[in-house]
Length: 138
Length: 138
Image 1: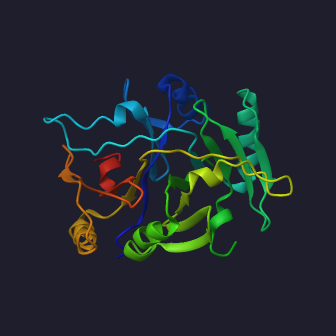
Image 2: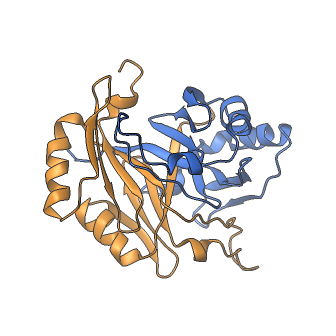
Image 3: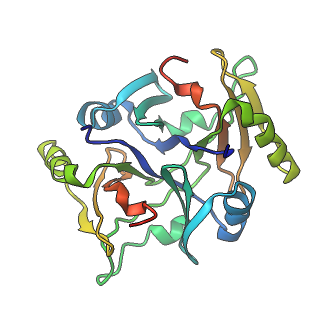
């Protein structure tokens, strides 16, 4: 059994949980698992949980009577890439444009797979890519 | 078919690719897919690719003759959580301690699953958690 089986949580930092919810929850349709106003909102994307944090809140060490969750918090545009089957990327692009988003980039990598990039409301670079981009045989 | 099937790439920002490789490649045993000195190194973790970026390099917009990959780059401690089967977490903790790492936190969440936290060489909060932490029935 491998010790590590995958990525359970990937984090991004945002500045507005309501705006983030319109992007990740309403537009992308990710299931919201939990939200703590003023701190974070978590969403499910397949086997991985997308953690959206307000960095100034998560940088505060836990209280003495709280679970000892280590603090963290980054500033500046991060990056996250969703797996989107290649045959669904046209539909993905249409969804993004229907919501008024600017397509920052849309191209095929030299070995074929396509990636589409937009910005989330916090300025993070969000990519939608054919998972064959990283398949061992791609 | 769902438009989004999971997380294809999760990113962290680091300040030293060699130090990062000792942590992610050598200690954790993740397969390194690619490395561009002075910019990034990518590793495979199950179905997701862990992207380690030097943020001052990735914040530079692409050259006119390069692929139009949007710039990004965050500063400050980020967060990533690896899925590690609950029955393997003792072995995981021993591996981390054998490599001289300080266990910043190691506890069970109220509903049972266990998480272990350390810092990577760049100060990111790296968690190893029983994936039942987020299973719908947990």
